[in-house]
Image (tube, rainbow, N blue to C red; front, top):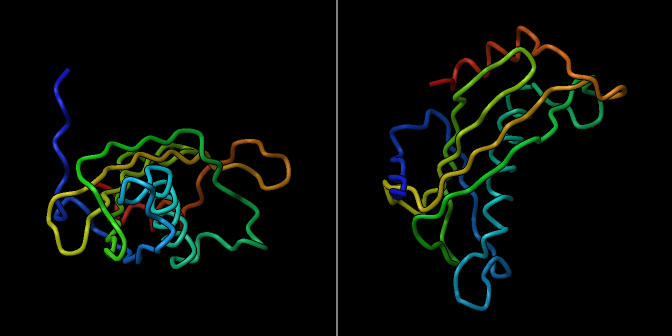
Length: 144
């Protein structure tokens, strides 16, 4: 099995800067693998909130995470700054597949790459619901 090639910054149309915290490091002296999922979740949900697509108290449609993964290529440690790149690779009827590049400081090659799938559901019934036209348009802006 061949090792995946890490993506580069130019593959991502949207970025969020996330400072690492002292307690993100583990006993091996680098950011613990579980913290990368915080970075992934933060860039996806920050984009949705900033674009007016998610209101944590009022949204009638919410995204449920149904699939996640993360490949690691290099270490990040405190006090590094993470630059989380975001793009959409698949926009379905009620689902979205996000690809996230996790970049250390000003490095051009990713330290990690995340994969995240949301299925959009009715907030009350939890039944799948079609992605709205406005959400489809906004997500289309970062679709590759």
